[in-house]
Length: 325
Image (cartoon, rainbow, N blue to C red):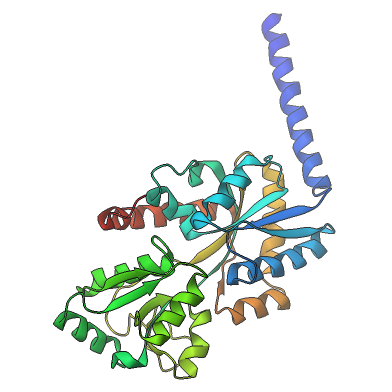
């Protein structure tokens, strides 16, 4: 009798849980949703998040706001999101560095991205462009490689900080081509300051996302040497891909939306569906095109698959560089 009663209790509990989950899906959201961005206001990820927030606000019939928490390569924002309830009302605009690289870059990170976050939806991926200052005197990537091999360590390259994608991307370029260049991390305003340093010829090489480089390349203030990806950028039709040049340089630059682990599956599914729909809207297509991003329609599970993939590939690279803090 006791066994039957216990079984009945389990059945009723499971039924209650399913009912609660169903009710959660039907009622969510009942209050404002927050998207936490680990970059400052006005940055590329920030404008991407604000466009998404506007679209989601309309489709969910609820306010969606963006909160900027920059610093420490995204760890401040990540730790904040983890400190909030796992209810789907605090989301994190997480990039590959936040999800795949930081666990290798920081010995005392304070969280484990693959365990503490659950994927909601991937958003987009960015290519990378290697560019140089005109004063360096090279116009093609083979010319840069030849110069760097002739004078190992003389040429310097800029990045937006140790462990930043601009740092790791150029280190991978060095590894793939066998060249040596001196790394100069540029602090302060991040990417734009690094690009300014390149244009001035102080640190004449950089590998970074194209959104900040294309106008400068078109104006002749920088020279584009190569771009990642399967095809040339429409905005830079004369700049070849690394693959065209016979160099295997695959650099992930994806953004995603994640939530704290234990967020109800029904809420995650609802958000995933709405974000995938948002990627098809004219507003989001315009935003992505303006930043030269490629949309990624995904399932929630795809985010953690991407996280593990890029952690496995880049963990050994970070270890070899000896840059863990």
